[in-house]
Amino acid sequence: MFGSFDFDVIARTWQVLVFQGLAFTLQITVLAMIGGILLGTLLAMMRLSSFAPLAWAAGAYVNLLRSIPLVLVIFWFFFLVPYIGAWIIGSPTPIKVGAFASALITFILFEACYYCEIMRAGIQSIPKGQVNAGYALGMNYWQVMGYIVLPQAFRNMTPVLLTQTIILFQDVSLVYIISLPDFVTLASKIAQRDGRLIEMYVFVAVVYFVLCLGLSYLVKRLQQRIAIVR
Amino acid sequence: MNYNWNWGIFWDMSPDASGTYLQTLLAGLQWTLATALTAWVLALLLGAIVGTLRTVPVRWVARLAGAYVELFRNIPLLVQMFLWFFVVPELLPAAAGTWVKTLPNASFWTAVVSLAFFTSARVAEQVRAGIQALPRGQSQAATALGLTLPQTYRYVLLPMAFRIILPPLTSEFLNVIKNSAVALTIGLMELTARTRAMQEFSFQVFEAFTAATVIYLAINAVVVLAMRGVERWVAVPGYIGGRTR
Image (cartoon, rainbow over all chains, first blue to last red; front, side, top):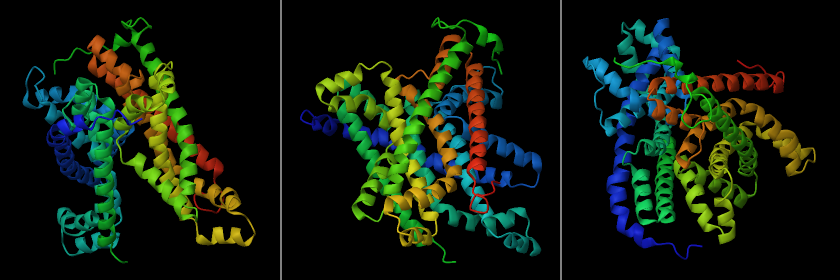
């Protein structure tokens, strides 16, 4: 069964795969996590806003993006971003957006919806009395959020946010469909070039498995450490 | 924005000679639904078994079930599909491998199998959470009444656990439908794949994607409404989830 398994092809190519492909995947993951959490927090604050149109708009956006497949979202933004860019800078023709930027924008906008729901739960887990106390002290909305609510919400939700990031890390593999040079795409290119499908895909699966398992173990450890005893 | 809107495009004939673009998309919808539903049934069965095994008081069985969950949760779905599609047929004995590769609709069956295993790990986690959410006294009471372990699960724990986890199961169901779009990478002509093909043939990018988006939203709405109905139907009055909302 594994008699013809060719470790040599992995030995020859793992450096390219890891230092280019996996590095690309990780780069998108980290940047999309930062952007997604920032945008997601803003969306969560909008969803909880007492100004109805704002809450409605954020809710519609989040629910829309969460109900269609990521594959379709990637296609959408792949074609839409050049038009939006043209509209923003007032250019008559669609602008050229690099593959990296396109993928990054897609994942920020998409994952923000999931981070939004997590942050919303986090914000709602803070007792209302704390918000009222903040207002009673004369703080404004941004001060209450910035000094009282968000720091606690982040702390409570860090494990969940990180778990979502592991999912994001797996989701980035889907840029395969627009042939960006991520880990999976590079591996499949080498697999087809060398006719070594089994070795390449098993290698990719093992690397993902080890990384994700390790990361989720770390998240579990973190969760135990930062849990607030109530 | 200079973009030529042409909503009439759906009534044009598509070049693959199977009818209008609209009919092509609806044929894709059938594949999406067939894939998602078959995979969902299998995932529920597998997930219920594995999730139950994770909670049994036999150490090595629980461990094994845990390993199953970790295996299918920590590899991206795309990579799992490639494994089932490209790698598994090669690892089988030659005759079986050839049989698998020459199956009619090979990409459909591969998509079903990979989605089923991928989703079953998630379902298993929900089932485990549901069982563990029950008060310890329930299984103790069952033991005290003289029920065997299988009877305890069958008559006491699982009926309540499944009711508790209905809402998260609904999202898993929605996820299966959405994840079935990944099958376009192994050549299944489901809804998203046909949308993409329509965009390539007709250059009406946004009409095609809008149509697909609307169809996915409609499926979502139907599933959510149906599951709400199920929740109300199986609710135990006066108990957890006895009142929805």
